[in-house]
Length: 185
Image (tube, rainbow, N blue to C red):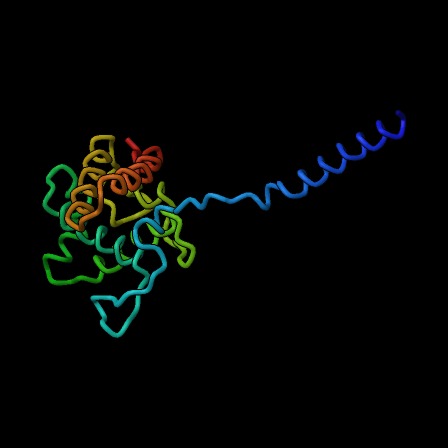
C-alpha cells in the first residue's frame, strides 16, 4: 500500500510539474493592443503628398493631415481664433513659416501622445506652451470654453480627413487629458 501511495503522489507531482511548465504565462497567447498611433495608420511607409520623393509613416501623415485641417478650422472659429492672432496674421501676409512650425510641433506631440515610437516631441511643455508669459505666440490664457472649442475643432478636422468616430473619440480623450495643463484661467 505504501508503494502504491508513493507512486500516486509521485504521479500527482509529475502531472502538476508538467502542467505548470507547459502552461507558463510566457507560453500563453498574448493579446496585442494596438496603440492609437497604430490605429491611425502606424509605421507603414507611404509617399508623402507634400514631397512625392519622400516616404512618411502612414500614422504620421494622418495626424499631420488632421492637424493642418484643424488649424484652418480654428482660423474660422471666432470662439478661439483670437488665441492664434500672430499665426493668422503671418498666414494672411503669405508667411507660412509659423504654420509649418506649428504643424510639425503639434504633429510630433500627437504622434508621441498616440504611441508612435519613431518620433520625439521637443517643444514646450503644455503649461509653458499655453502661457503667454512663456510663449509670445499665445495670445491670452485659455479657459474651459476655449478648450471645448479646440477639441470640437479637432473633431471637425478629423472628420474632414475621414477618421472613424471611434478613433476621433480616442484622440479626444488624449486631448481631454491635457485640460488641466492647457486651461490656465
